[in-house]
Image (cartoon, helix red, strand yellow):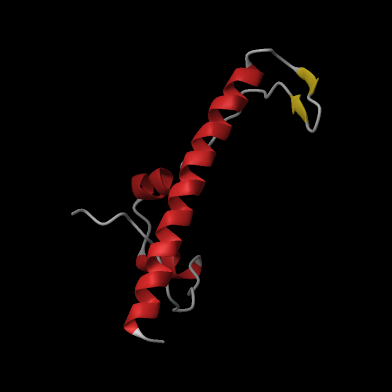
Length: 96
């Protein structure tokens, strides 16, 4: 792969991610508007959206619990697993 090709790929990836971010924001705003209608099924001409009531639930922060009890290294190792090495990629806009 040439440097020019890599630059084109990076720029294309960034542009696509920008579009995804914009579309995700639009989708979340539209979902919020439909949720204001309350529970029910709402049909458009192409799609149907079902709004359901979600009960409150309790969520436990196990990281906080672990810090509180100050577990030993042996206990941590016993409940840990190795995640294989690999690559990660993130793209952000250039600041000019």
